[in-house]
Image (cartoon, rainbow, N blue to C red; front, side, top):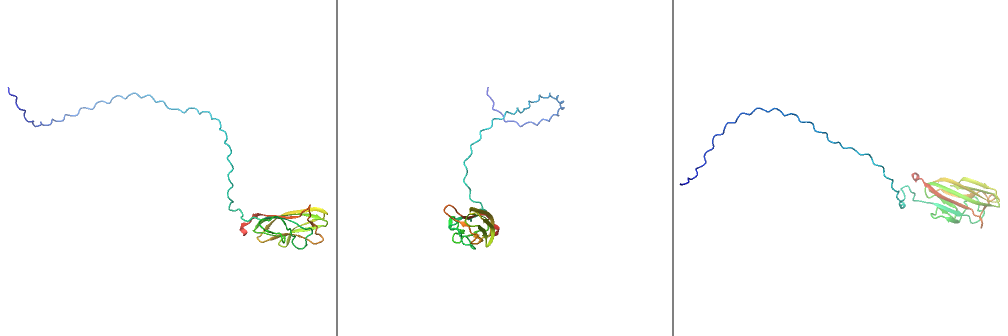
Length: 204
């Protein structure tokens, strides 16, 4: 028997009509509520640990540079009497210089000259021998303090704080030759000293 050849593909048939939508179903029943989850909690605070040992003190730092208000001018002096009974009515010369690096004191005439406006401190310690001593500290020809000592062999001293203007002069002066018991010896000395304390910049 002879097998036949396959035929050509036929045309698609017409699309069928869409059927009607069925009725909606009833809603299902509500499910049971689930169990509540476990909530976390904070445990109790632990005990405070022991305090650590205090560390060793570090080395002292280097000194910083001078501040802006540090005065650049310094002044101080100390001088001693070389011979007893100096001439009256003029500055007493204390030629034996103990300290006078800045040169504000003149050992040839006994005058101290202020290098800057400010506050100064002056001192004198004088040995008295054989005569009464009447002496004063002068500021620009005006006596600021006076001391009288009648002792045959003793000492007199005084300290004072003065405000000076640059160029002001300070010195020691005895009253006269009768009351001039200022003494200088191998075992006794008379000294005059002073130093600059505080600058007054507003008056420069």
